Image (cartoon, rainbow, N blue to C red; front, side, top):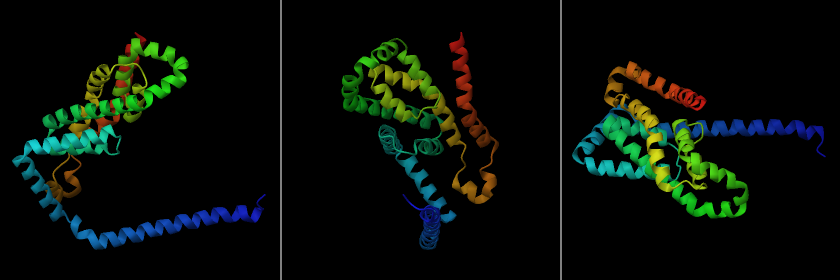
Length: 241
């Protein structure tokens, strides 16, 4: 049994470890800023943005194809940053192209994750817990599409969890695809619209922080914040009827 002295020393040791880790991060960050800070100058970033815009205008199809593949991979393998990627594509491609690309790419990635999970896990889970899941499977055969639609509209559960869990149910892949396509569309519209409201780097260089705080961008962030609550209220009212 550890004595009282040991119990007192451990918190101090863990505190010193956190302090040293924090100092190490500060030192490494300072060295990185000193060494590579010139790469983050606003003039250089503006020139890179201009080059990116020119490349997009010169080669629109390769840019769209590459963006589509990257988005499918990110969502299919549940990589972090899908929301930021959606904002970026809205900023880069505009509302129309950005919405079409993100909508179909996100559904394609979700369906890919669904099929991989079904291929790898479904037989194992059903063989071990088939008796316990029988009633659950029967219920999903009747209400599976609406249940999935609700999960897609209200992002209370991470989408990668939805992809895996639904793969363990008897819902057909075709139903999973079209319900996900429709259910994720409202949220995709809001995120892509928010991305279109971010200013260019040249505007930021000229106006500073005032270039970011535009009424349109504030509206976009308000929509992002209130969207889940509004959808939940609508679904709750629909269920009560």
